[in-house]
View 1 (cartoon, rainbow, N blue to C red):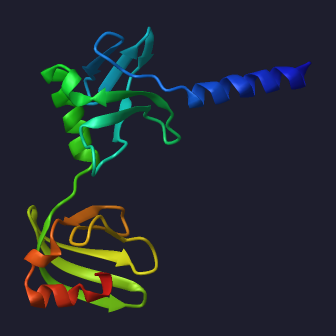
View 2 (cartoon, rainbow, N blue to C red; view 1 turned 180 degrees about the vertical axis):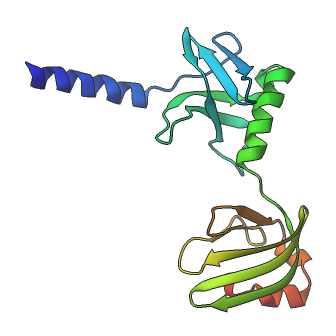
Length: 180
């Protein structure tokens, strides 16, 4: 009997995981917590803090926004199909959370890139100021989004973007040769 109960419980958990629930202004209410986080009430269920995650961060940044529980092993609560469907107040609240999650300084100048012992040490200028960071050479630290656009993730999982490497000087591009 216990075994059957566990199987039924596992089936329910699987169905919950596979269920796609769209969050709309009609079925959900977002609010700001005292600590500045975002809370959600949807279909009578209350979540005191939620995570806001883009499902397609580069190709559709304002569409298909996943709202998840705040735990480390977060579960999806639902998806906002289009941010444009939300009130201005809710959009601003969610945009703040997205800006924190997807903080990505733009690299505007490359001063130095030094390769040493499997790591690359970058000294760059960004739209947020001068920055030094380290990447692991063996991983997927440099992702090509197009022929000219790259995202670089450092060892602390911070992201940096070069929207168009051809706009850097030839000397700067040579410093990035290993990654282009």
